[in-house]
Amino acid sequence: MGVIAEAEENLYRKWTDGYSRERLIGNFQFGKVYRGVLRCGKNVTVKVWEEENNSYAVLPGDNEIRLFEEVEFLEFFKRGGPRGKTPYHRNLVKCRDRCMNPIHGKVVYDLDPIDTVQNLLDKDVFTWRMRIKVALGVASLLEFLHAKHPYLPYLIRNLAASHIMLDQEQEPVLFDFSMISGGILYDKRNILHEHVNGCHGYTDPTPGTWSDKCDVFSYGVLLLQLVSKVQDLEEVGTGDKQTISEWAWREYKSQKSGSSKSNFSIVHPSLESDPLFNNVDGIKVTMLALQCVHNDLRKRPSMKQVHSDLMKLHAAQLDAIQGEGLKLGSVASNLQVDDVSVHSKRQIYQDHKGPIFSQAVRRPLQENNLKIFFYDELRMSTNYFSNENRIDDFQYGKIFYGTIQDKQVVVKIWQPGSLSWASNCDNAFRLRDEIILLQHPQLICHPNLVELIGYCREDEHFGIVYDLKALDTLFNLILKGIENPFMLLC
Image (cartoon, rainbow, N blue to C red):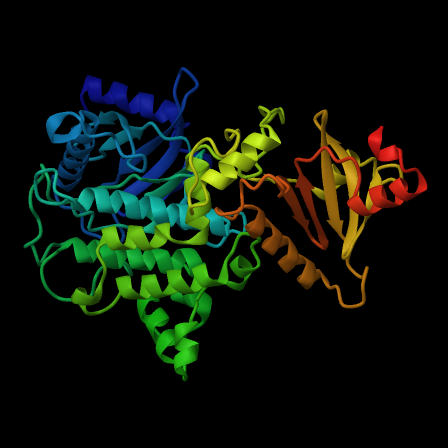
């Protein structure tokens, strides 16, 4: 190893704490990825190609070529594409530095990741909304790459959950292009007998040349994993060797009636209980994934079609509104928002009744997500649900005045057993339905609909927080008005 190469290696070791297990994020097809911290304190991702691989033979020069092509590809779009005017895609990783070592190639990305999608697949913290956001982001990127630039379309050829990371804004970022073909790079579509194929389970089993429909197949497998939480077939106990795509199709074909097939879904039960889950979305995503992994290439959609279909999902519409700066009940760190008069809100509602409203409909977003509260936070905000803070009862629980970071709010708590027919399961569905309703694109800006800050879903506790400075319920005010007719005028 030369002096310069040794110095570079020492830097990479220092950034990754000697490639320690604590800094290891996971494996990609040809090596490992680590969390790195630069001398300036910036968090980055370090990818290392390995000389030895248990799954694939690494021939002399392989890693050097893969690293060179990946850097060329990323730099091409960093320069603005063929005419220097193409915006850098949000879901494409950004290269910061590289080490062109012929044996252990390395690259540093401007990426501070939460984790790989592979590592998050079976985690409950990886919510339905986050999964749809990943599906949308990757679909958007593939649609972008499959378009002509004005060269041949780029083909990823080794798309996998282990090659996608979530950044700190929960956006998916594709970070491996070791087998990329087309565009400004060498066209590998007609190389049929490479010593390295795509990732196991993601590779299109249909014989023939590589095409964009091979990426569509890999994407379909990813979509199946996102909604089913299945990483490998051992988790579903099939007992025989089959891929996830084969398992999904077998499940679909096992449905006896036409109605069962039309309502077929492989969404994991834990995701179905997510407050933002929509049953129709679950069915649509399942069927879209099955189309992507269809054995007949002609029946697979293009990534443009996939992206278009995903954008019609309820969860995608909510994200689209958030992306335009609309307030979806999000709470800022300081919980301060600009005021909007009732008159102006009413006028905006009358002018914008379409499915997606303009940026002026709601006050600007401060955070992308609804605030998720702990039950103890709601208790403290309402003085431990004291009688002094209690406003009234509603059908399934109680409503309280609350204060969060010096802002007056209203806290609604569902109480299990408050009625003989009210169960925890019922309350979970009520909470979910209310969140969906309050974020519906055609209702969100109505001046007479309460605004949502966040919610609590902790064990048997279910609550919701409104951005509302309440006087009292109408029922109580009517009673007070009867006792003192002049009270409402005070």
